[in-house]
Length: 218
Ligand code: SAH
Image (tube, rainbow, N blue to C red):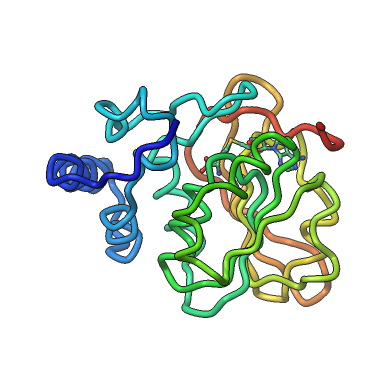
């Protein structure tokens, strides 16, 4: 069951969450504003209503999670978004991260490999607020060749390696933010696509994501 009521209490908790994330080092005001605007408690079961604004991940079914707000903010900040850019997201999950991106005025294409999570979002009325946000069911290792190339790619599951097809689908000068590692902890990387097709890497902090799995799951 989902809640559709955004109360003053929720709004107050959201303000506190934004301050917590700011103190942890997020400085992009547009990212903070998107988090302030989005009713995160709508994106999970109403059982989590009272704790939805704690800075932590929560289960969303199928063994998956809605990412921690700090992590969402961290990845989004690294994307250095500009309005109207085309952004590919790997791992739709709850669609919270996708809506943070949509709030920032970019065109989002998001892929989920779990059919049940993909179907859940079809019935999620709040998402109608973002008509330019497009949902796909499939395996993200292949990306979305017919919709690319993309200005930015964000991977929200732990990738054991950098999927070459996703690098291919980046524009020259485009950025990909991806947690890489096959253990419990992954290193956040930011890749910049070069004119010769290769990508340079910058290393950021360690995080812990659910794994990016191959194939679709019906
Ligand atoms: N961005 C999400 C985080 C979800 S957790 C949010 O804001 O809630 C990561 C998601 O990636 C899970 O839903 C998982 O099913 C999905 N996933 C894992 N491997 C994938 C793949 N190869 N292709 C597409 N989605 C994948």
